[in-house]
Image (cartoon, rainbow, N blue to C red; front, side, top):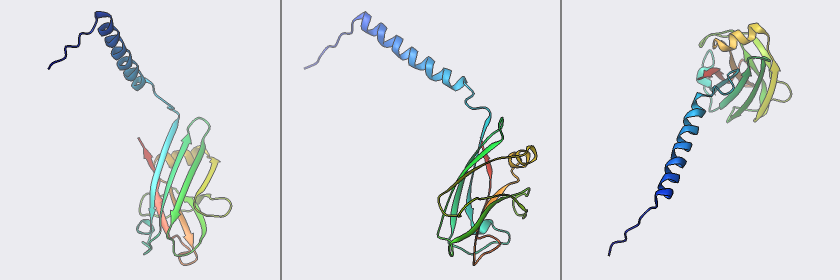
Length: 156
């Protein structure tokens, strides 16, 4: 037994209009440059990224965003499996991967996971951050120079 389904011309016309509308709206969204003044960064922190490398089960993640217009830098950090409680944490720079640098922005308050913060950066700090010259690290009593580290990577 076969069923013959006939579509009315009005119904077919409506369907075509609906499909074309959705397609044009979808393609139009791709043309919008959303939040052009915002830059996103991320990194994975491990002991292997420390200089010199540290043997640890500790791991961490940093997700951050920079507003280029206001220079407001906001971050969220999480970490686990450290050798002991975190004693400090900072953003360091300017330094390429494999080099150490001084503290440019310490984490305020108790350093415990998860951790959030924000700061308004100087023009020089923004330039170094955008050039990939900042890293984050977490310190412990067993590793006072840093147990885990990750270079901030600009996400495109």
